[in-house]
Structures are given as structure tokens and as C-alpha cells.
Amino acid sequence: MAEDSRKRAVQWMIALQEKPDDAATVDGFMAWLMASEANKQAWSTLERGRGLAYAARDAGVASMISDIDNKHTTNTAPTGAVERLRQKRHVVSVSLVALAAVLLVYLSAPMIWLWMAADHRTHEGKMATITLQDGSSVQLGADSAIAVDFSKATRNVSVLVGEAYFEVKSEVAPRPFVVTSGAMQVRVTGTAFEVRRRRAASSVSVSEGEIRVQSATGPTQRAVVVSAGNTVVQGLKAMPTSASPTDSKEIAAWREGRLYVEDWSLADVVDVLNRYSTSRMVLAVWQPSRIRVTGVYNLKRPLNSLRLIALSNGLRVRSIGSGLHVLSPY
Image (cartoon, rainbow, N blue to C red; front, side, top):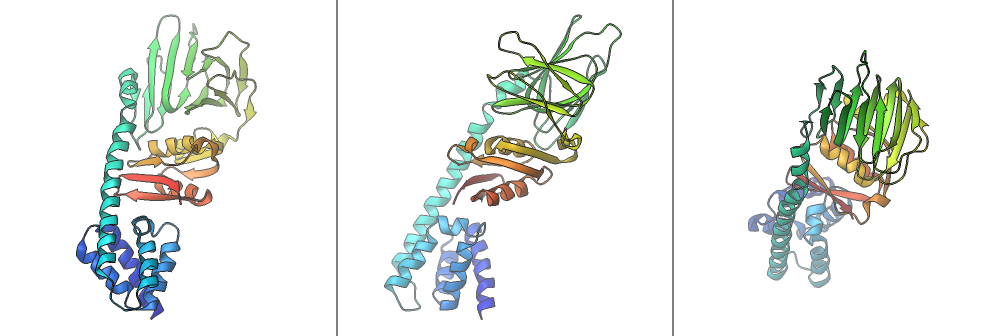
């Protein structure tokens, strides 16, 4: 009997998520719920489970159960309670749809200027390899963009968003190959390295050869020399000071579908997951930069990675249809 109630509770959970405004579905659920104590217990257990009962709980089902238990002892759900449940579900459904529309417009707008400035770019979930005029190659991560400006004297590339792995070709009469990412400037002649641009910082990791890193916006300073197997991270204002060792397997691991992070902000991690996802992930967390994330995540399954991060940080993922996933507190 208890097993049957648990199975039916899951089925009702799915039905309520799929048809939140359907009167017959709500009436059927309430009738089943009030039919036995086993059904109430199964629903309460399911409702408390992480990741299963978001839609039903947010619509007020848990409080409705409490109201019914406290005020009625019969097996018939009162008409007023059912009507309040319908109204709550309708308000939640409309609100979530409106929120989804606003968020999608808001998130898309800042990208317009970026794509206009880009000479090469990729889309969500897609990577590409580009051969530049001098024969150097650039592997662009998903939803990434660069601008290129070559002249007789210099070879300039700007990483506008995302990540890029450079394999720079040496020249007989070498022109400096300069990569700018936010406030960071990288100067090389011939080497291989990764540049990643995040919200509040940029980083460069070297896999072959040697590079020099300095500020692109601040006063002239002595460049930091970075050799193979090392990384430099530079914030928006701070100057790079020294390099730190990096495991070679972590450099541009996104090419193999992996994301290695150490003490990243939650906002930065979600930014990367979004670039490798065809759906949109939104943060509804107060001060997400204060939540730090460390680990290895699967970029081929970004939504699963988001759920793992949520579980590790006491958060939840609420899916609105198949195209929008909101990360928020319980």
C-alpha cells in the first residue's frame, strides 16, 4: 500500500508540473491526497525531497495540506481549498512565464554590441578552430568571440568573451603577437597558451613556450614572465604579480568537455556552463560572487553540472519548461 502511494505521488508530481492550471488535474490530485493517510504521508515525503517537488511546493500545496489536515477530518477536500490551490497555481504559472520572458530578453541584450565588434565568434554549445592571416590558429570555446587587428608592425587579438587557445606561428621577421583580455595584455612571438575572460578577471595558462603578461589599462610596469605549466590571473584593476603552477591537463580542458575550477565565484561558473548549454541558466541568488566553487564539471552535460553545484551549496534548480533553469535558495 505504501509503495503504491509513493508511486502515485511521483505521478501526481509530474502531472501537476505539466498541467498546473488544469482543473481536472488539481481535483484529481486533491481527491487522491485526501483518500488515505498513506497518500498524505507519501506526498509529504516527496515534497521534502530535493529537486522533486519545486513546482508543487512553490504553488502552496504543502500549506494547503496543512490547512486541510487541521480543519477537516473527512475524505472530501473542501471546495474553497481547491479553488485557492487553482488560484495559487495560476499566479505562479503566469509569474514564471513572465519572468522567463523578461530574463531571456535581459540576458540577450548585452551580447548585441559584442557580436558587432567580433571578427570571429561561436554559438552556445559550439566550438571552432580559426586560422589567422599569419598561419597561427585559435580554438574558440563555446559562445566565445575575438576581434583581430593585424598590421605590418603587430598582430593584435582581443578576447571579447569566453575562452580561446592560441598556437602562435613564429615569423622570420617577428611581429609581436599581442592578446588583450579585459585589463590583461599578453605578448608572445611563438608559443601555445589559453586565455580565459571572466566577469571580474582574466587568466592565461601556458602549455608551450613562454609569454609576458602585463596590464593593458594601468601604468607601464615590469612584465610577468610565464613559462609552460603556469598560470597568471589578473583582476579588473590589480596588476599581475606572479605565476602559479597549473596541471597541464587543466589547460584548455574545455576542448575535451571538462571545466576545472578552483575558488571561482558561482557567477563565473554559471557563465561558463551557459556558454556550453543550449538552454539558459539564471542565478536568483543574493551576492553570487560570495559563493565559491571548486571542482571538475562536465561541459557536455551542463545542466547536470549545475544541479551538482546546487546540491553542494544548499541551492535548488527550478526548470521553467526546457529552456530556462533558475538557481535559487530553497
